[in-house]
Length: 323
Image (tube, rainbow, N blue to C red):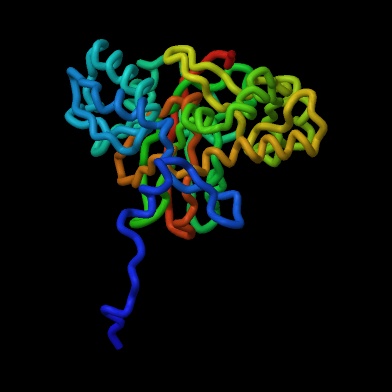
């Protein structure tokens, strides 16, 4: 039955026009909708960038770009590496397609960006201890599906990481990245003031405790003691403020009782759930992602079980996060 002509339309403009482009709560909830205006300036800046040695396809408002017109299997010049590094600082994560690197070339490429670290709690690849291997199948689940920066339990967490797709399922297994500056900038002023001078304790045992034999726990704790990092750190190159807590490794906020600390960590980590702060990469074999480990958190989607997904990662040694 048609109701055409029976409806009294009272609106003469889009519902958003009455809201003055502001965030507003949905009734009966703490969920807000509306534009995130604090992204506009950075989005415009990134739109205006030009590149000499490659092309760039933007992926999201402030994070993520696919680099085109560059063959990473060749010995690229130093000036190209320098421009790639600048693209990484600008876009926070950059992606490449159809780059059939083997393990040796992967290590060689990563070494162009700095000294490589060795991960004590994830198996490496054959003759290359600098490459950690994530090999998932029906017997090995993907447990990286939570927002995190890598290795924040180190006194000097990795600066950047280069991840290569060796074998990916026909569908699923995407990786998402979230902008840690946008997450900080989206906080209200009172919360920014509250957390600006706070430090948080980071602990490898939260995620990797089961990897350590009982008889070696004391040894590993001596080698990797609890560390404290600022809750908000400053990027050493861009100067951007970055939200620097994650559920995988952040144990508590210094000076807070356990309940207060847990609530604050949870509230801050929820910032990374905001879809407008994210980009999403659909892997194909021989795809590569390079991310700024301080400027983004990432989330490896675990929706492909029991299919096979094999990835290899090299990480570059960084420095201690600072305000």
